[in-house]
Length: 69
Image (tube, rainbow, N blue to C red; front, side, top):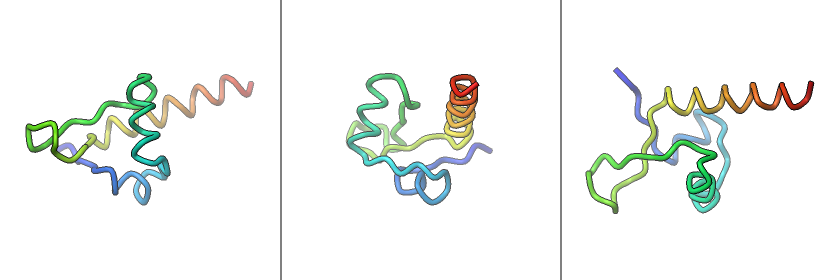
């Protein structure tokens, strides 16, 4: 079963310290995975699947390693 993370889970569980506003900017620039709404409406809470966030963080680490080399 896939685990669902909300915005408040990102910092303690994944070390993502971005503000909501900055995350929205990154999402619009396609530099962060887009969230989904569990309520089905536009006003629901932003959520992400944990595996999607993990894949994103791993890709960022690989990119940083290539850039540093």
